[in-house]
Structures are given as structure tokens and as C-alpha cells.
Amino acid sequence: MGFWLWALVGAALVLGLISLGILVLVPAIVLAVFLGRRSRNGDGGSPLGLVAGAGLPLLLVAAIQWNAWHDRIVGDNTPNPFYWGGVGLCLLVAGVAAYAIRTRRNLH
Image (cartoon, rainbow, N blue to C red):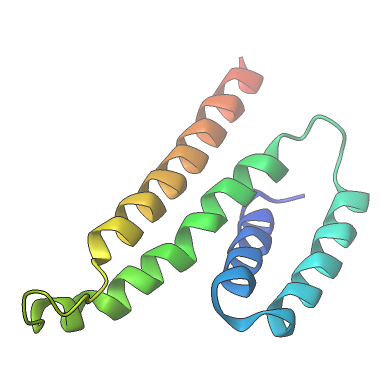
């Protein structure tokens, strides 16, 4: 199916794991099963979309923590948004870049 539908599944899975739990995990798993049955073999969008989508909630967490981190007092154990943002950005860029490379190779 589509890369971005799989990215939505990856984002929902990570969001369910770090925050909302079963409320988001169950629909994400149902959507993953549905997409898995409908996708063509060798499509390649599923694992790469999951990787890219996994980075989106991490970027959201970094954005939410941004103001609190700048208003912190040194030593108050406020989480550093650069860790969340760095991992999220790496996952997003890696998934999108790998999918672009794979798609380009399949065209030639």
C-alpha cells in the first residue's frame, strides 16, 4: 500500500508505546494487519514507512518539551528535547531517504 499509510501505523505504534497505550495500539495493530493483507509482495513501503512514522511522535515529544527545557533551572532533571528530537529526526530521514532510494532503483 502506501508508504505514508505505513508511516501512520508506525507513528501510532510508537505513540501507543510511549504514551496512550491500548487506546492507540489496538487500532494501529488492526490497521497494520489490514495494510499487510492488502499490500503487494515486495512493495518495500511497509518497513520503511514504519521506520519513518516512528520518528514523528518522538519529534512531537521534543517539541512539547522545548519550552520547559529552556525555562529550566540547572539540576532540576528536565528532559532534554534534543535526545528525543535527534532520534526522531534520524528515524524520519532514514525511512524517507531509504524509501526514495528504493523507489528510484525500481524505476530504472
